[in-house]
Image (tube, chains in turn purple, green):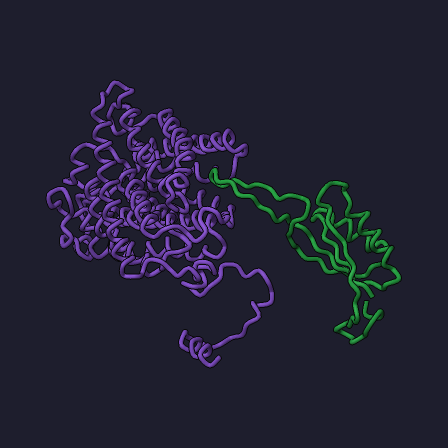
Length: 432
Length: 112
């Protein structure tokens, strides 16, 4: 039987999907190292928990809501590919098995929800977070990804360039993070109490895994192993190096030292900013996007102290600001020599593309912020959003998960085996 | 018998340990500790946010000795731990009523 299947494309897309999955534990480590040692397990679990919940939703109806036949440019038909059963058959006309695309895009949904968790560590009920993540994915991520990437989606049809997720992923998650940080409120003691990152080596491991996985994220968004994916790959590399330098220069000038956390943060800021633009700019354009992202995000992370919202790990300062920057810079730095084939303002293309980029970016930002705020307020009113102050002070790992991350001594904590199953533990406590 | 407790700079541990071994002290207990005295802490910066860290890392050395040897031991520790700069630490002496070697049950000076 003749088949149009391109094995190179298929192999690359399956690999790229797995690379995007690796970004999720990478993000968990990146965030986990930045929190205090009493909260690291909860941080890991928030990011991984988003993966579990959104992964299930994606298979059931999320893919269909995102890439099903568009209903008015706003949402895909959720019943069309419900459960994905209809997508299993081999399509001899297709160069890429549709399931490879479904899997690849599913990882994006999971990662985007996970990003939000960085705004609200140390203090959020785990079940409340899972409920929020599921509802936000359904009401915000699936529709917005449809707007931006699906044929028929209104932002896509308008001609906005978002190659791999500046709007759909980073602005989207960053705006939701801002809303949730406001709804849930500050950590006890913030900003007076020192909340130093407990393990910067973990942060750098996470940043490294994110960078590696991001090549799948960006270059995989070409949906083929071709020239576009290679150009995007190189631009992703270029912007990230430049962004780390940009962030470190700000630190050197302002604080006197170039820090490890600054380098890791600069890496992520550069990756965020180049994500929408990686198909639209030249390698030098990518360097400019990167260095601007490093400088601007390094300054933007201080905004929370001025405005008094505890976006604990700077999801707003890095993802919202970096996403906006990358999305808008396309309007200036796009060159028709790049795969996207559009000229921005600085390449004689006029302001038209910039206008489209701004409409796309700010629409997603406003929608995500408002809906996240409403979901958050409802869950807060239902009492499942925030742990008690005592639990927060003694540590969320113990309160929410009954675990501690680091057991470095040999004394076993001075306890004894109680029994199997939570019930026996409760009974034992009652006897005391 | 006396318990000599010395709070010293961590990088001086090796010198202090060697000095005590050289005068025949047969054992010690060492723990990582932190605190503050006249030596100030330092400042750390995370994403532009400055924190003062007041507690300075130190090493706490504890040695049980025969009272006769007290001056000799104190000299050895102070000489070895001294840099002349602020933050060299403190040494103090406590009287000890009884010492028992767990393995043999020996008591007093025999247990040192």
